[in-house]
Length: 363
Image 1 (cartoon, rainbow, N blue to C red):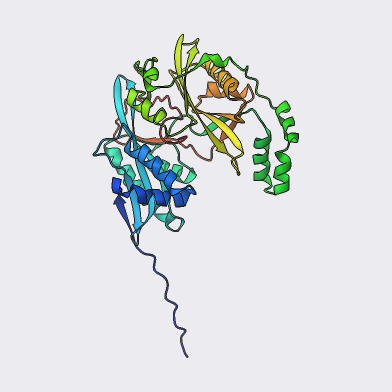
Image 2: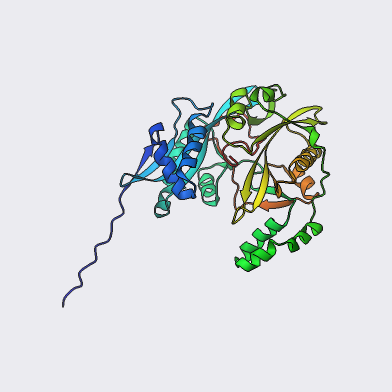
């Protein structure tokens, strides 16, 4: 009897964990571009700004960790420090960003994440852009969700592109989605309109420099854990020229009776980028729901001709209730996108005032 000759199995090259340094940025950008579908040039410019120009980064801080196989990068997680404060105490967090693993190496994603988690001996850790898989890793590591990061509020101004997206997900037929995007879908707006008064856009005073923001009351001691909005951070985050859609305003609030910082950017959504959204990134100091509604009304008055929807994240239950009563739709995520890990008990409180500008969720 002749035994069949066994077919040799292709061996998967071994993988090793590596520390990412500045000289690796170009290679990391190429890998992330392949995974995300963006251009390498766009990713590299973003990383050099987000990682290397970050004012919270110190020379000794890690840039991130990678997974190599056959001398190729097949996974990465990057580190993005951010300064927070509670009362008068400043606390440096080590954030996570750009957690990608090649499809053929998905089983090794936990190795990269565990390497990042070892940093919890030195800093509290946080992330604000976790998908469901990453959220499971955060949870397994003993992390807690950042409050109110399990969904967002979606206020629709123009329904046709939104209806088109909904119908595409239900039935990707090209004819069907085109019909959904036609003026017929405007009828939905009559049934589910936003009931927010178009507040006077004059209530929003555009600010054109970090120094103008620095003059607002954003430096008082905080009763909650919140980001430090100092001159260096504000300049880097909003005035470094990285995002032409970013705008910064001073809003005259009634409660408290003072000017409040409001920051926004614009992004597209949808299967063909047909939904133009305005994202509220920061409102500080914290204001009650009725003032949030006034801010939303002023933003709608200013942007209604160029956006299809306004997006709010990090809203507490009272704010969610107030906005849903005015026609906003609540969209739940598959899992919380924000997590924090405080293994070394470095935080004096877990009472947060999180805003979408924290971390990398809406950059």
